[in-house]
Length: 168
Image (cartoon, rainbow, N blue to C red; front, side, top):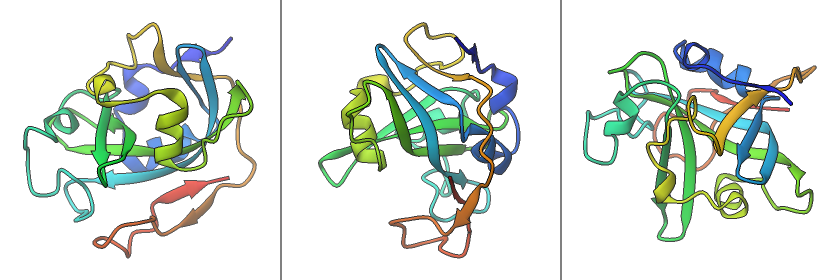
């Protein structure tokens, strides 16, 4: 249907990758959704980024190669799915906040926790190479959003001044 995104797509500045992920298709098994909301996190300058204070067991995937999944558990009940960006060692990622469900169409995917629940994305999906995986990846189907909106990120206490939430 579409073309799977390559490592070079993710190996770019995080803000660019975040905006360019809008309109791409997230595929996990039989679940398909058009990405319509993301947030960017840059560990070098962003205190809201998990990697801001350096590498830990939890965040080491963020310092790895671009195009790999970073999945974490929050509030004791929700998983969040991110894609590592920029060159190895930078500690950057894009949170996939929401998708428009394509298959099946009745899923609730407006929010990172709902998305992960609907697509069955859990900690077992952490560190998956989305560039080589056959059942968990992102592809380009040539959808280009007409207007991309920008706002402050949701649910963070630090780095509130960065308007790095993008959606359409």
